Length: 364
Image 1 (cartoon, rainbow, N blue to C red):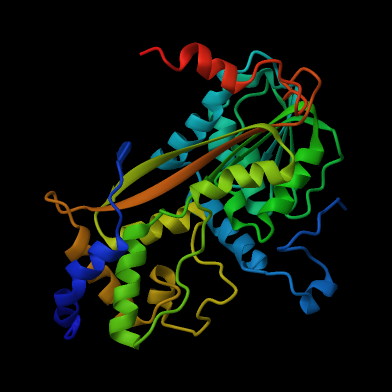
Image 2: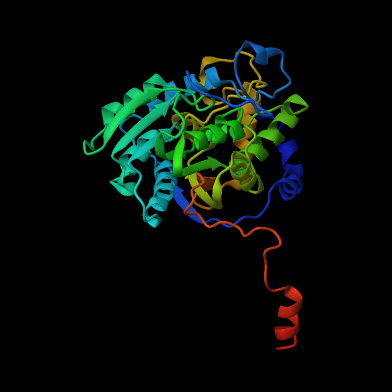
């Protein structure tokens, strides 16, 4: 910690540059399948020589999900439950029922527990890349009124027949796919006509405090920066993703949750329990001590300690806790159906804006 003090002289300047003021809307106290070939992701041996971008290590993410299944067993996460509840609440706004549903990755357990008969679901498929996560959901099932099946599969290569389900739900899972547009296209293909797609993903403002602290610590201790936290979609991208996937009546809204922790180490442990730790292919793969690999798996000892110290110095509140911001983007889309409102043919208008302006424009 001997050089931490030299960082603090630049802290306020960098904080003003990197941190954007946002409104806090929530606060908690932490105690073979078909696929698409887009600009990203994909699979198979041919991908190794292709130009498509592969950002995340899906095998490592599966290991993270296995670990999270055991760390979160028999525990309820306030933040995860709040996101799942907010997502499922949209089903109460729909007049129609969804007899068959597919739940993809992310917070499977929270969705299963909080569903409580919403959406008129009769058959439910729970799918995750992690066998341990699927087993945990099966063991925790307490609602026998819904016929539930469990499937180990990958969101990037959805093992579901086309036009086979009425509803697809994904809570905090799709942001780890290499080909997010392709995964959403597959979801749209799997839906029946007039089927509903509901998803919640982490947005680009997530963990902005940790990004700032980690960047400063890495510059101070190692003389440069490298990828430490995963790239996430921005709010402006969500609508484009829905449109590109071919969903009709797309809807996007965003919420921010602020969770308070006793220390930066508690934050990292929470991320581990959620399965949200680093899975970048370009991550630093050097081996560190067992202790630090369990806490800051991507930082060496001095950088990890510097990150925790800077985080506390810059963001600690009066009660001694540190806040962490999670931006959640909610996406809603429907598969096209004749009952949906349709735009009129171009040029079919019978009244011009000029006439409207002449008639009403002069009125105050």
